[in-house]
Length: 124
Image (cartoon, rainbow, N blue to C red; front, side, top):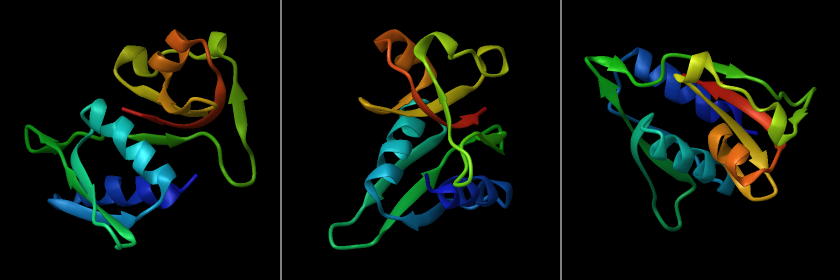
């Protein structure tokens, strides 16, 4: 998993940037797609032939939509969970993002689809 993507988004929101550029990859696009569906970012666009993705950040009441991120799987240690072990994050105010055989999903969708996988990060 690319930790750089999450760090750039969080740091850019902390200094009130409008957008940020991140490395283009299929994993990053899948993560950004989930973040967009859950309203943590405004939009993202990857230009053909370019190696970067431009992410438009979202703000609510002059504060970034992302309040916190907790990285669960790291390069040195991967955490896995079955669908029965997927719990709420911050009493339902956050989401768990995981990599499954059906792609990158948030915890609610993974539990509904009855599929587990590698725990990537929590976001709230």
